[in-house]
Image 1 (spheres, rainbow, N blue to C red):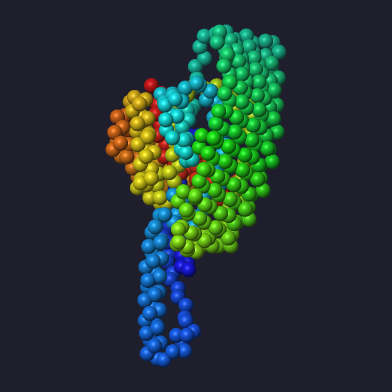
Image 2: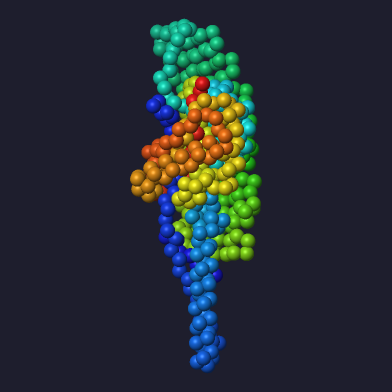
Length: 422
């Protein structure tokens, strides 16, 4: 056996991971046959020559393995198991029926799969209050109405919002409910809550544990709250045991990784098996608290953002679009054309691993690679590419105690296509 040691979108600027290329060190090793040691001198010399040739062959084979991306999870190094993904609720502030220029019926044409999200873009521009009437009572209460919607604030923190479609009940202590006929949210106020819509179900228990089920992508996430967790799709399964060990398997590719939690991982694909050095898996971070119902403040979207995780597009440390990503980008090009989008912006982002200069360059190269692919696929929109390096994370790269947050870094390694509303 050969052993290979291994070395919300950001604010769309009102003006609108990083994979570190670590070198793989190779060490070939061969054993001494006791029978050969007992042979005659000429036989020993011949055996030594054969042994040396075998070692060279093993080294050459190992080198081929080292460069074979099939032995690595896309976007990761050989033997590295992706973290159990973080999950979060959709932005409750974006309660518009349309996601800007790309409406839900159009974005539905982009095949749902893990690593790709389509959502309204929140640009945090100042809102404008116009028309309607506002009555302020002497007890601090407020009633605002414009004929289409009504907001009632009882002056003690509680309130009700109604607009004929959306209903929000705020109990004043962080708890409350939200419903719009499709989406239902129940917030307990103690950090726990539930969220359900046509395809998504999220449960947060308040003790750091929780579950996530997405019928559109086939993704299922279970966070134990004690460092353990599981992630599964129709083909991929990841288990983190919480003490450094864990497993990864992909039924489609046949790739299997077993991390023993003690510094090594067994990687298998077809009839090939190698053992590589691998850091123990970091414990799965707690889910955190369910947001207060106060987060549900209707805000108009300024466009659409399509986010693609780096593993969907690139191999580890590379800016060359993977062959398997061609279909995704072709679908995206068709989507932009069908929406008649006049302009779109391609933004590259990385995590904070490696130095800032490397990350900046990598993000620029990846954004440009996606732009070039979209142009080659016939996109008619005017495209611009820009890289932001590690400057616009959507999740923490480190935990509060300074330890690594691999799930957060995974979300930060991404390419975004922003289509302004028009």
